[in-house]
Length: 94
Image (cartoon, rainbow, N blue to C red; front, top):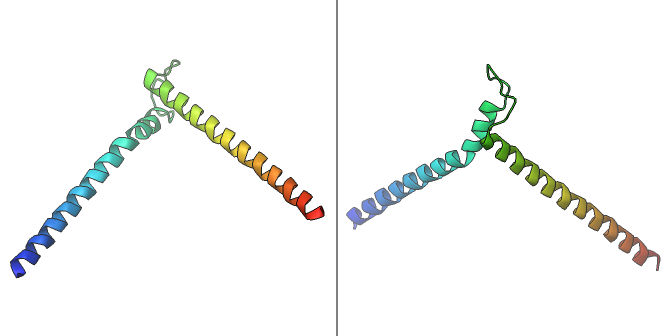
């Protein structure tokens, strides 16, 4: 019985370590484009190129699309909030 408990503790610990390592690897790979942009886009290059690399253009384009989508969603939420306020005010006066 005691040997079984030790086995399960070791197996659980090993699984936990493997999972943590896998998550760290996935996180590092996922953040790699941001790290490259930070290193390359910070103005620290000795000879900054007038033409951005294709990888940088796609990164900036993706960020622009994301910013536009977030701005649009925020605008729609604000419009819905104003409509809700108007409705509540009309309901309160009637």
